[in-house]
Structure formats: C-alpha cells, structure tokens
Amino acid sequence: MIRATAAALVVVGVLMAGCGGGNKPAAAMPTPTPGSPAAGPAAPAGNLAQLERLLRRRAAALAAGRPRAYAATAIGPQRDRDRETARNALGLGLRDVQLAVDSADVSGRIATLRVRSLYRVRGVRGRFGTARRVDARRTPVGWRVHRESSRRERHPWEVGRVQARRSRHFVVLAPRALELGALFAALEGGYARMGTVLRRPRLRRRYLVVVAQGTQAARSLTERIRGVESLAAISDTEVQEAGAARRVSAVLSQRLVVVWPPFSTLDADGQQRVVTHELTHAALAGVTSGRTPAWLIEGAALYVSEDRRADDAAQMPDATTLTRLSKPDAIARLSGDRQAAAYAYASAAAFYIVERFGRRRFLRLYNAFNDEGLPGRAGAEVTGRAVRRTLGISLRRLESDLGAWLRIS
Figure 1 (cartoon, rainbow, N blue to C red):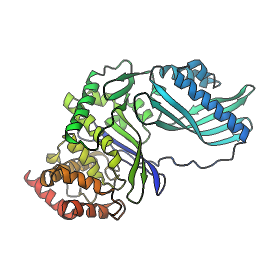
Figure 2 (cartoon, one colour):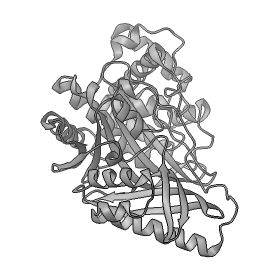
Figure 3 (tube, rainbow, N blue to C red):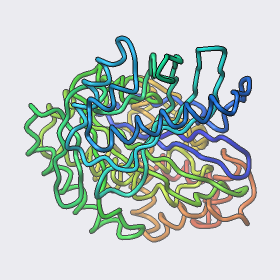
Figure 4 (tube, rainbow, N blue to C red):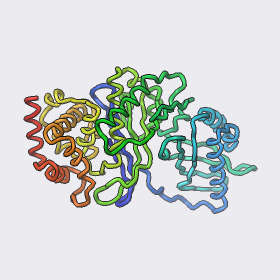
C-alpha cells in the first residue's frame, strides 16, 4: 500500500494495495499526488473562457452518450478517437463528467492545457479522475481539441469497449466478452466475510470495480503501481489527510481494479481471499493514518482474508523485522523474494497479536496512529510508542516474542 501527499497540513493522498495471484504480491511504487499545478503563462481571459466552454461541451456530450457531439469538439485524428471512446462509454451510467482546467498556456492559435478528467458512476459514492494534457487549436469556428493524452491512468472506456454490470454491492466495468460469474461470487463473498470479521469501520454500500483484460490494459489503467502484470487485484483509494497525525479527514473515492489473467487462474478460495484483502484496505482507508506502518496495514488485510503465512515467515532470514517495516511504504519499496518475506512476516505479526492480545487490542493498535497525542513522524519510533501504549510492551519485545512464537508454531 502506498500513500502520496501533496501538502504538509491538509493533503490529498492515494492509498493503493495490490495482491498477486500467488504468495508474492508485486510492489507498488509511490508517486507524488498532483497538487496545485505550477502556473504556466497566463492565458488571455477571453481564450480561457472559450476553452473552458469547449471542455464543458465535451464533458456534457460524453455524459449524455452522444458520440457525434463529443467528436465535434475535436479536429483531425482526435475526432475518430473521440467517436470510438464515446461509443465505448455508452450505457455505463456516467454522471457529473467534468474536464477541469488546472493550468493553461495559450500562444497564438495553440493552447496547452493541464486538465483533471473527472466522473462519477450511478449508484457509487465518490468521484474518479485522472490528470490529462489537452492540446487545442483555434479554428475558424472556435477552439477545438487537437489531442488529448494521458501516458497512464486512462479511463476504462478509453482502453476498450466495456459494459456495466451490477450486483448488490458492486458496479463492475468490464469487457463485454468476459464471463464474470466467478468474480461476482468472489466479490459478494468477500463483502460478506468483511461483515463477520471486521464490523467497524463498515464497508460502503457499493463499490466500483474495473476489470483489466490483459497486461497492457492493466498498465494503462494504473499509473501508480509497478508490476501490474503479476497482480490479481488493486485497491485504489483517494483520501484527504489533516494534522500532524496525518489522520484521514475524508475518503474521496474508492475503486478496485481486477487484473483478469492472474485473477481468473485462481481457484474460488483464492479469488475470495484476494477480494477480501482488497476490501479490507478499502474499509480501513478512513482510519489508516499516514503514519501507520506497512506491516500493520498489510497484516490487517492478510488477517481478515484468512491468509496465514506463519510457516513462510518461520523460514525467513532475521533481516526482516517490524522495525524495518515501520515506514508506511516499507513493503511497497521491496520486490521479489524480499517483498514476499515481508508479506509473510506481516501476516505472522497480525495473527500473533490477535492470538495473544485479542482482536480488539489489535484494532486499537491500528487506530492509535490517528491520535494527535501520539508524537512522532512515520517510522519505528512512533510505531514503538503505539505498540507500548496499546499492547503494553516495547516494539523490540514484540519482535522477540513473535520470533519465539514462530519457532514453536
């Protein structure tokens, strides 16, 4: 799981967690969350107003399902791309589509815009968005889009033709050809599992799920995750943080991205375990401080999804410790066998703490990092204070006791 911040006191962050199709989840790499864009040369007021009107027409046409009107806002090859994109988006239940200008640079008849492309989906809380570059040209009939580009983090309908399918707690955007019966069973099964193990905080009533068909599609949909070809699912949450404790003040949006090739090869138990893991991250996002250590974040998800890896952890080298995994991105920065070992150790730590201290004190430990009265920045020092406050022992003692438990378990 990663968290990127944009400012010191009130920030927007992105929480992402990915689980591989086996015992070695791939790494997520941190990237800065876009904040207020650097101002380019100021655009003349008249031009900027015209460009904003163009983008409003463009957004309204996409939301209304009008491919011809959407393509009419562009020129050149972009028109054909727009027509196909808008057709792909038909019937998805898009609403509140917006193309918000963050910055504009106008030079004569050429304009370069930095834009946030935003949308909502009917029945799902939150707004989803990506950063875009829009190149526009002034024509005899006004400004038109010459090119809209995004290196990564594309919308699902920009990757290919998708269909919206719904269950009680999920809206799934997926390629039409895929048979999703097993996915819906895993999603609803994971949702039910959450209700029996982690009753607080509660899951949202409904989540958006995006299915990527193939490695290239997964790469196009996810900008902040490395090694998506080996992931089975990704939990993507955008939050707003505040205060020295980096406590989440608002959860802005949440979605799950399912990578179809690795997910579809899992058996039913494996699919539900992966879904439950990612839903745990989603449920806990609102109480996951920016100081919460990686081993605790992942340990909680591994525990709730019944992914017990004590046997693997017992075979690990002594170099893997809770102290070393106390930064929020400590596991995300690892890869390969080292990351697999870290996940196993996080799983063992969670199961051990629950077994010895009980589930309630484990959750108290998770919540302790939200307390402004707990001083310290993210890392081993504040983790040690939280452990002593909630479990009554030092972090070093916890590591020692965990090691002894692993040797006899």
